Length: 509
Image 1 (cartoon, rainbow, N blue to C red):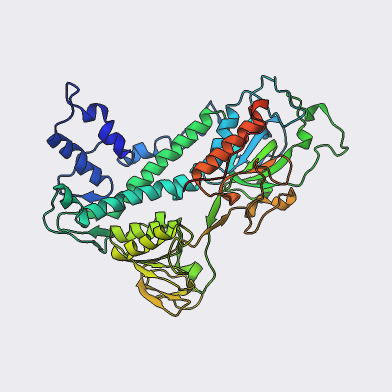
Image 2 (cartoon, rainbow, N blue to C red):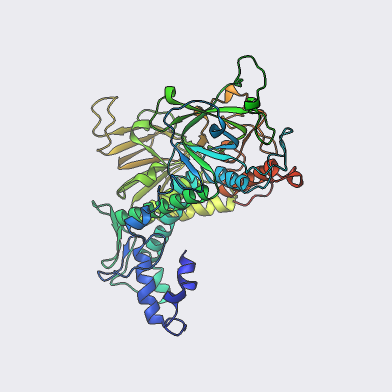
């Protein structure tokens, strides 16, 4: 987006006659507002606004967030508890999980001109379009990457990069100067960071702009799904044991679809609509079901850890920049969050169980990172064997969940960190499979609860597949997207794609 602002600004980047904007005009119209988008104010006159994902009014950010629920192109269902397995509740392809992999697979399937070539009863020449649905309990479509992962993290990283530039002297090397020499900023009670007297950082401004940007992306996903003719179902899905519609077991005309497929042999999925109870669940059937539910952060055991810490997801809910923060974990999520907090003004500590962070990466990389984090002021606690307990100064007893006071983090090696405002647990993730009822359909799991799949993303149950983080292969958004698309190609794009699959070899990260 920043490159587009500079190089592809169209009329904004050109003079009246199409000439390049003079340097002085460019600096006034581009540099100052660019900082402002990320909460950095250079002076009181930084009021110029330009087109940018983060620079949207609240009305623009929420416009269309859920306005397409009843679009003519697609269907958006939040059922009232009706039950049955009629045509309206039967799909060729049902996707559980509206993250990157699930949406990519659903949209690829919906664009296919053929029916499932893996269904021996299917007529590939049928003119009936595929019926595709996607189920998720989160109305903010897009999954982890869009809502609490890659996308908002990159926004915070850009803000931290700007802070490093303006507070740590980087601008001086290129001829820029501030009213006084600057150093890493300390956070104030208002949740802002400050470096020199001429530069301030406003966390609340950045969070509002970032959240508006994410809401806009949610709306784009929703419109794209509706435009593809896909039915969106809001609720919690779980598999039901196989069963017949007719008690006598006989095949009736109502069981046969127009393409020849048999609904009685379809996979049955129960969905509890958001805000409803189990008794109001709706039963859907499908010829093929994809599990793309992703993962969730892990909270380790220990006294007070669940009560007095947040996960990496909770980082994006922080309303203020914490004056003193502790990040626990050795993976790239932990080191990214620690680096962002330190650059924006928090007194940050990183707690690592072993010798150093990213210890499974290239040794030169992890060693250099360790040195750089310490040089930037992050307090790195190594060989701690993790956190033993977290206590809070306003605890009245062991059952108190008070988080208003300062926290003390006790490590398993005996060290402690006092006066902490926020503790962020980033010790890993686990597959989100609890609500699915995998045992009902014979889907096997590997160590750690991940769904076992073969090279074609097929599980141990006929007609049920899985892609993305729920499989535990390579937990990267582009891999989930590629896997989901290859699967849809294999199932619905005809014989030429019968062997379509994704490769997990030599994947860059």
